[in-house]
Image (cartoon, rainbow, N blue to C red; front, side, top):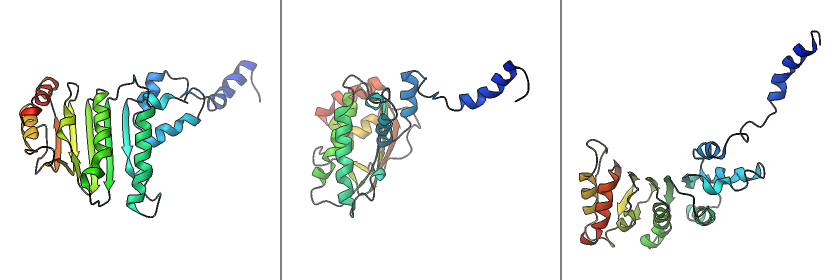
Length: 221
């Protein structure tokens, strides 16, 4: 290589930089922000990258629970639900207990079940856990069947956004399942939701203080 020693060093620098692990050099807060855009299963898999990454997934501020990462794991859809439920249950159990959850996002495909409430119990427990961790946003998208959600779990002063698709408030638990939706609608910004038709699709942005009042009034619904 011709040129002065200084020129040779400068020419060699790009090749050396290409082998540098710049991602691990970032501060934890920024890495966690990046991991927030990953589905939960992929976020957990980053633990094998290095010792520093071993426990980072336990503090990711967003939980993106994607059923279709487990689709095809068995011969049936009901069989696929088993590893998915096991994974999400363990994920929430092993998270850092002091780490908040800013957003909980769930995409779920439910197999037909004789006891629909029992089939929905896990999803209700996951949503409740996220709200106990002060989640500001809860979005649930269900494919195939309909998820029954217990309205009582939505008592939170931190929740500002709810997204439902193919979700019903549970009539068996709440004799007036749409009363809470009406109250939340009254506390929301104008034009902030797209449509409510039998609570099949609901996407709203709520004022936190007003949503807290809604939650406190649940006993009167």
